[in-house]
Length: 147
Picture 1 (tube, helix red, strand yellow):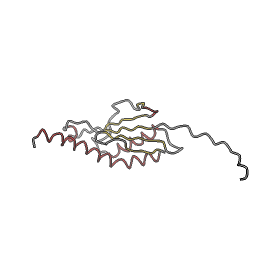
Picture 2 (cartoon, one colour):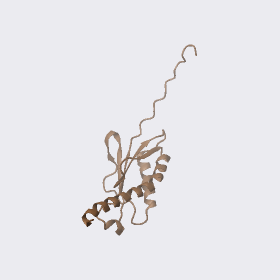
Picture 3 (cartoon, rainbow, N blue to C red):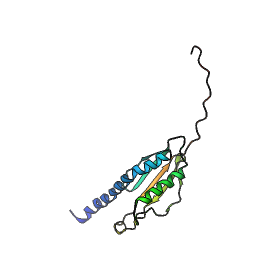
Picture 4 (cartoon, rainbow, N blue to C red):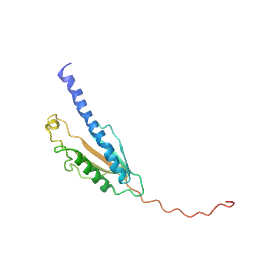
């Protein structure tokens, strides 16, 4: 096998290792989302970025910014120096279709392992569905005759 034919496979395998990182932090992020009244799910391949979607799940769901900040703090706390989330590379949040707001947080992988391989660092891409107004109070109904 030539060096040229091996290179794409090596690159592909290196990118797939990000999925392992993402999978290890997912349960903690889901716990945070649940504590803030949201359901958090993966949507995407996890090959390069970590696409998540958060949906308000309870009537007491916090605002999206509060939940996102708690998630950001958790991820930063779990990565040693050189593996912290870097500053925002794009303005956050970004408006998305159907009222979603999206946040992108890029990992600052300054460790030589990540800067010498010529690929971009992984990042979290979290879309949050908007909270809706609480359901209006139900009208009192009159009992049906015969009940």
